Length: 148
Image (cartoon, rainbow, N blue to C red; front, side):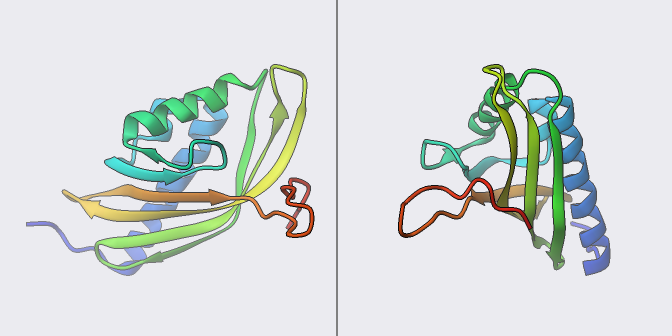
């Protein structure tokens, strides 16, 4: 039988997971990035394809992201909010990354992201995640320069 956790305990556990993910990006460690994903996770990311399904696809996408940077990646989540119940939770916030790509392009951008969690066999697992960047409806161009 699964042990019940209070919403406050659940929130603390989710926050700890998200801090581990921040460290994983800074360490460029794709295995650590997906350590709390469910095997069948569904991820809507910023880049094509339209969706990634499964932990292997999400890990590979993370590794490709890390491999595109020369030197360190600065990564943070601004305004992380967590809503947690006994066996489901979600969190959202503005994610920020900066660094230099292997092609020499300087990156400093924010995007919106939400992670959905389910408590599976006593452990929180990310079962769904969604990232997006706003765009200008008049031009169709992505608004990379927006800051909170």
